[in-house]
Length: 361
Image (cartoon, rainbow, N blue to C red; front, side, top):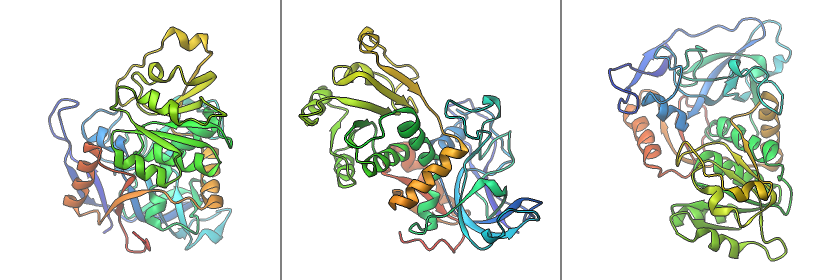
């Protein structure tokens, strides 16, 4: 029988518990009308999966496979599908449900679901086969391997919305600061913004990660552990545009207090996370400079399609840090979680599930 990977419930308090991985067999599903059967080639981890294992995420299911992100091949097309030519085609799958196209936010916030270990959907991508609605796939960009494509969905969607929809500064020549480079969302924003001709600057706790970001197109970077990093950043800004137009941030904390002097009047912070603290400083100078703070999370089905089209057009390759093979490779998968927990990754952590991924990594 096909295999899936979930988590096992054990006793423990949120934040203290660490649910063990649990491989198990599942029946091979059959697609219904307007559905596709997809053989999963590769799936990737997100920080959400680490939070779930520590019971720091709502609505956890122990009966549902893990993971939101995957690529695969359509192996069966159900009746009444609009595009039967999808049969045998490689695809990248959408990581969430319940948000169609409204740029302001979900049409019904109560209906937004992220796949994997969720009580609100039986679908998770850590399994050999899934059935999805025909509209929940995009054809895989031809320049990507399946492993690379599996690294794209949730971080690519989150980064695209933060930069394009929310920052209002996805234009050539604009100065964009991306914090915490090395994480999947930050790397996606760097790649998208650089491809659009923006001047991208980054922060990181690792000089090596800053250098790698510069090799990918960042104009400069500063170590956020420095007491004067904002001054170092100010010295790097172009003389004809000596300010930041926007910050795409996943850290929170004192990011605005540190950058308020170099953020332009009417500048924007597009905030997709708060890894430093659950609160963020908001100095009085922020409203005097008409700074906009715009929260953002994930994105719509339309934004996902737009993002994949841009990746295809610009031949952007998601950054993959490392790959392990097999859903039953528990030691290897635990190693991926350890790397994530220690913040050592530069790019995505991927599980190759089936042997048809044509991985170049």
